[in-house]
Length: 332
Image (cartoon, rainbow, N blue to C red; front, side, top):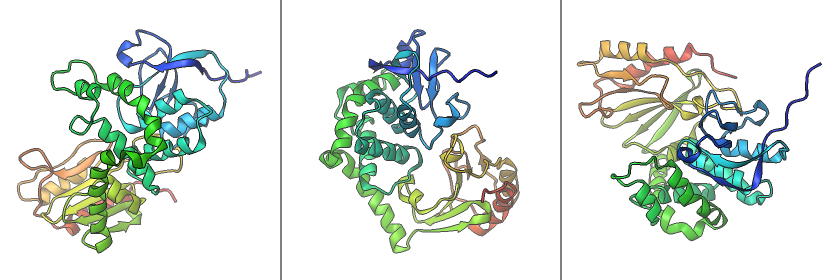
């Protein structure tokens, strides 16, 4: 006779965020990443994490929400930690520490902002403003917080992940409660995204799709940020074609994480496509970064190591890469 599953650990009243480099073997709940064997529970969408399958969701923040809804009743744990700093990690740690009685509007906005941070997708302007504000607070050129500047100083010797969380977690709730109050923080990023969206609205930048390859083709005079183009296509591969002949094919971050919401096309090793393009390209230079990357790219590398222009036309590149992508099954 099989035993019933053990109840999940619960967070103790007064639990706190503890930087990974201060855990010293302390039992904890890990959010949005991996820490070590002392983690009694992982609430993450990273591949290979031991998140209970019934909690699977789009982001770590959404996974934490599912965990809280279950009102866990297992042994108490008084520490939360993470191994990196990004919006989903910050917001999932914040929501876990806030607990199951977090007001629904706060929780919904935190979850939507986490999707902006990880995937660039959004429909609610408030979610974008929250994401832009927290990003600006966490970056050295824009933050007003001395603790953040110190953590990111070129002379700092400590992993900044812990200090950044400790500086930002107390401010997350205030940002969620009134994003418009933080306009001085989100306005520069907002205006940049709006200007890029104007290119799409005016037709100066265009997105077309090749459904059989789950591929979107973005033709643009300049590179667009993810939050400008991601809401316009559900394709999990994007070929960006710039006016100067630079072309980059990216397999999106959604294909790296455990994307529990719906099936996605598998990631494709495009090293053979790079070889085929080098056979056509005068001087070669095409390379595939490898599937170990969270957003692996196929690109022609310039002398500075950055993506550089190609002598090939977009149609020639598509003729090479589309068959490789079509061989991988695309979910219905």
